[in-house]
Image 1 (cartoon, rainbow, N blue to C red):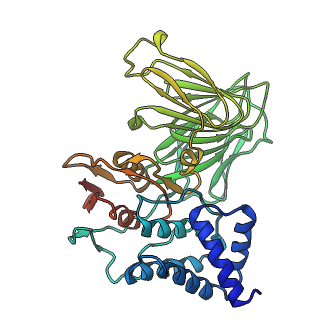
Image 2: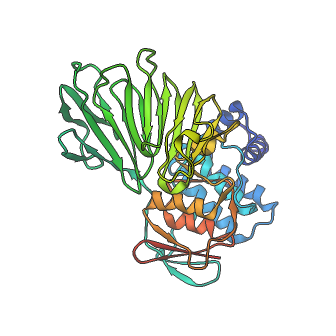
Image 3: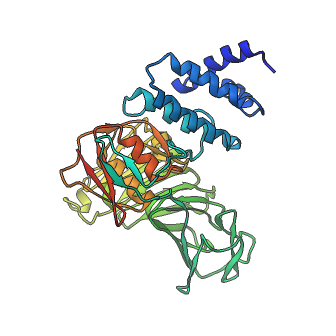
Length: 411
């Protein structure tokens, strides 16, 4: 084990590098190995707090950070690699607090062991009633071909159903279609739908892996017959498509556009209230075709760039005028939900609140108009709503949670 002096010196270097987002993979492994050793937690907390003493932190800030660390160490098996570009609303204290939450990748509370968790002070000094609304979880409903339904979050692991010779299995919180069953001639469809506050993972019969965000659905065949693999989605879905040159994989995005692939990884955000459909490509190649949007302002045949081919790192946004392609897309932001984070980089208040509405199953109102603010940084999606609101209230936006899961946002 390193001497105390060396541990302190090296730890300060590594923690600073982590908080600045500059650690290499080797440095992160060095820091992680040290943190996972029994008996090092007290030294870690002590030395981090000593480093923070050099900055403008008051006693309350240091106490909160201490509680974060104690909660984190109780779940030390969940340590995660560093996240770059960590900042939050240009506020120094929360830059470091958020970094610590992300560092350990756990649903840690920013305020722990408070005497009254139902009444939290806002920045204006008033009190607001705060329901204990937890984060979303693995929740979904499977609708079989005969119309019967299975609530997946309450179903036990094992065989759920047999669809025309094809076993439907739940394993470790995900649905899997057994690829080794008999082939079928008729195309039989199932649907998985997540509610607000839910997410789910699915493996199709061809091995394609699918992640569903909150308020999302996918309709798919239990076995892929014919020359194409066709699925239909709404909401937000991440795909890792199994390669099959003989059968292209085609995603119908609510009849508004289609994505055609052979084998690739990509994310589609097609929520109705977003104003556009965003498709972000990680690897491979996909072809997007823009169909006639319901609210199109021009005829379908006059849409600009009605067909485009995306390359890795590009994002296509489809709206009523056609398809716009941006290179150097923010992949971290597009996949933050899948990786367990909210990414609020360059996001306005309304964009942030839409994410909270879906994940915490709340309704947001703006009685005095939408505040003109932009956010930055990442927050764990494992936090309770109360903790997320505590962070957001350090800005000029004021939040009040009322009965009926209604969040009121004021300037």
